[in-house]
Image (cartoon, rainbow, N blue to C red; front, side, top):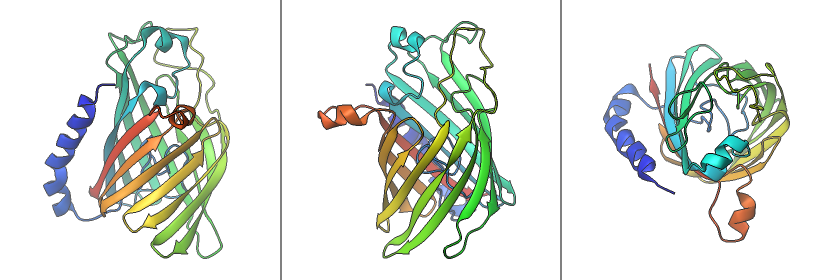
Length: 265
């Protein structure tokens, strides 16, 4: 796998540190899709009003949600990357714009010289939980493109105080809100949605600066570590999308590195 994309993300992140320090502190908890989440599993929360979060990820091909699609198996791409921006402009509502691509794989019919995909998502916090009462949220993902992340979902989340911070337990149900793909002329493309049905997961603060994450996204088990070097930055290192079987044999596959920053509008 070629990791020059990861180097670009790190350099880009370094360029924005001074800007974010002026903007103020905002602990970012967005997941791999750009919405507030563990990895892929949603959490009933949103980026606070008048704040933003942005980031990017680099992953090997094993971590790509649609790797079983025959077109990508034939092209054998090496890496998958994406970038996003999430804004909490309206109270209790976040809006995410995300783009992704595989430079080493040409796009299916009608999509351009190499694979690209875009998505717009929204997530709302319907109830802020307290004590034993969970927070309740709802959202939908992926309004355009291949609809890989297409989902309309409801989610409940408990926050449990602990020695090093709050543990998170979250679960819910997702359904298709649109059962076809847009943005491509490839009529044979079958959309393999990331979350479709029951999903659940949890995050446990091992230390104040690192959380352990495990989740079931309705199709696969994902595990990872979320690091908080400072309050306005997170780094996720995870094995996702059927990568665990290879990891058990000593092969690092399904690996994803996700870097995220937050600040004030």
